[in-house]
Amino acid sequence: MHSWTPLLLGHVLGAGLAVLAGGVMALRRQRGDQLHRRLGRVWFVAMYWVTLSSFGIQELTPGRYSWIHGLSAFTLCTLTLSLWGARTGRIRVHRRNALGSYFGLLGAGIAASAFPNRLIPETLVHDPVSFAVAVGAVVLAFTATLGLSSARRRPRSPGATGAAPDRQPPLPRAGRARRPSRATPAG
Image 1 (tube, rainbow, N blue to C red):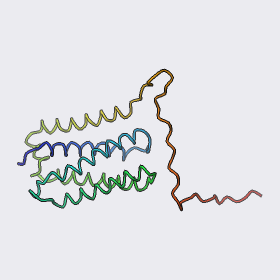
Image 2: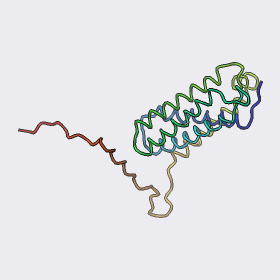
Image 3: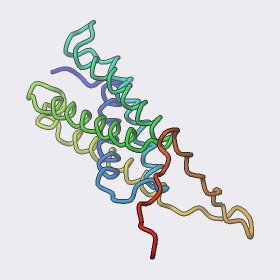
C-alpha cells in the first residue's frame, strides 16, 4: 500500500471540497447571485489547487507524468476559460466549461476510487476512522464555507448599509445587438 503524503492528502481534500461546492452550484436554480459567486470562488480555488497539485503526484508512473496529467493541463485551460467567461459576461462559455470541469472532476474521482489497490478504497477498508475523519473535515470545511457565504454582513457604522454598489451588466458584444420586435402595428 502506498502512503498518504501531505500533497496527496491536500489534493484529495481539495477535490472533495470542489465536488461538494460544484454539486451545490450545479443543482441550484439561482445563478449569478452572491452565494453563487462566493461558492464559485471557493470552487475555482479548490479546482486550481487540485489540478496544480496533481503535477506533484506521480504514483501511477513514478518519476514521469501520465495521461492523468494531460487531463490536468486540459482542466487548467477549461477552468481559465470558465473564469474568463464569467468575468466578461459570456455566461454560455462559463457554464459549459465549468460543467465540463466539474464532470471531469467526478470522473477522475471515480477512477481514483474504483480500483481496490488505490489509496482511497484501501484507507476505507483498513483505516475507516481516518477515512471518516477526512470526510468529516471536507464536510465541515464546506459547511463553514456555506455559512460564511450566506451570512449577512453587519453595517460598519450607523447608517451604512455595508452593501457594495450594484454592478452594471456587461455591455453587449459587437454584432450581437438585440433585434427589434416583430410586433405588427396596431391598426
